[in-house]
Image (cartoon, rainbow, N blue to C red; front, side, top):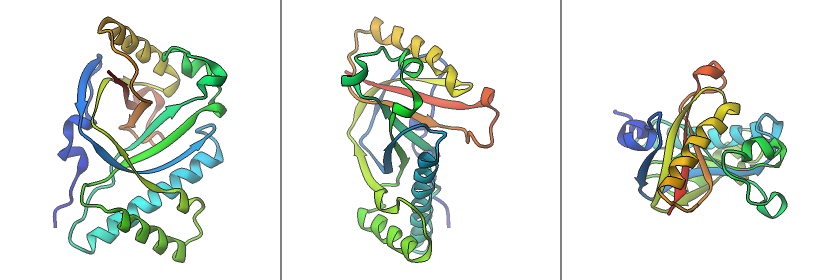
Length: 207
């Protein structure tokens, strides 16, 4: 039985260049959990555990039906309280907003054949077998078709403002307006990859 690999099937979605480019993305469905706080803190780690537990629960559930798939790359939408901090330009936000003040929505893209009912079944099975916090907070989440400016960032997360500054210049040159939340796709596993070798796709929805 051949696995359905989203990274290969949606190759352009998981590919970016080391310079800004414009990409039109189709409507996309995800498994998701949202929260606030420092990504190095315990709550973020618990949210990751819950998200991946359900993702792999779904994988094995569909594998038993003959529709195995590879769990996709982790992604995240990030924002902050603009009423509190004001309209900070995108390349300065990571420097001016404390890590504890960021809001996140973690995402794992799902194959189109995965249903919301299957997600609830996976959560129920996990709840009966294991004591995993925040399982109830894992949900399906959809993003509509959208236009983005994207760029590949290579290196540690704290150097992202350098890449964001290049993207901001490109966005200004094309007179684009903001049309959604900052989006990241983590091509590397930060737990196993040296910071200088991390690869992250940075996306800014525009109109």
